[in-house]
Image (cartoon, rainbow, N blue to C red):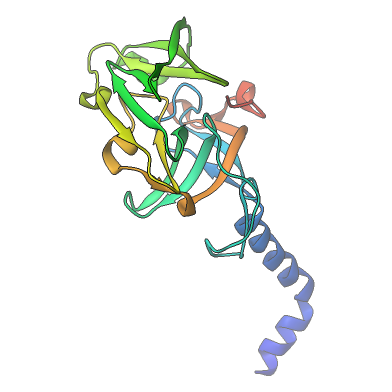
Length: 224
């Protein structure tokens, strides 16, 4: 017991710093490594994204308990969630808000009876394009606009669904890599309580296809 007491006394500054850091990362802000390509081209494999955990709620550290409701996710937000159904942390884009009626036909979104518009986009450097060629389009609906990736040879069977109505306190989330994303088309709607934060920037990026060398152009990149 004396040994433990002496250790704590000698290292109380470091211990206090570590506890504060844990609390900060749990409740205020954190960063996440993105190991999959479901949000390409917006988020690339190997990106480290900044997660604003106080964007929607002030939570009790180390829990999902909301102490103060600050805002709700908006259409187009990129959110991080701890999904009970998927049994993992996911990064997806908010497409359907509570009460929305959403459908997709041939990868064309329709929300509340109005179709999104699409324009061709050009993106390079996506490694998956070497084995799975894709085309890129800019999807627009109201204030929401972002790039999506569509497989040329292997379109997803989930490129058609609905119409479905989003229940209260739940959200319809999709990946930007529409033919390579496990999202609401497979897991259903996601509860508001599972959304832990929002991301708008890349902190850093390491390229797994090139010995994890840094992608300097991705550091601090804005995410739309």
